[in-house]
Image (cartoon, rainbow, N blue to C red; front, side, top):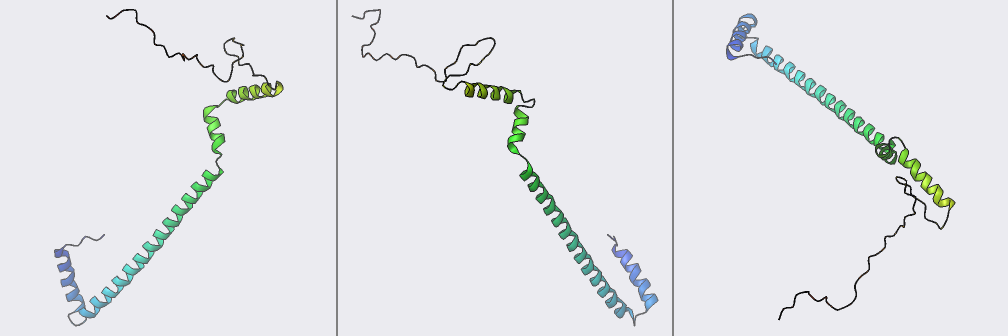
Length: 141
């Protein structure tokens, strides 16, 4: 804050000795030390209060952020990201309505003009259960 070198302090000391005098100089220095101590304690206390206010403000910011997250509907946000125009949701609603309208039947899924019904479970490929190994076409004798 104040940048006093040794030469400046020496000049101030000599001027103080000449103005105040050698008899009252120790009392003046003691009084200045007490004032300096009081000013430092006031500055320390003020800094502590400022730090407390900053901590409270940060806590309020964190509290506001938590409340904002609580108010946010995550499902709705994801729907906006995945389906911004709502087309997928409308198609799913149409499929659900058609499934409810025809219970027991698989709904038809139309894709590029294909109107054939699709089975939900894929058909398994036939498995060869015979224990015979096929003969090779070359004879090894």
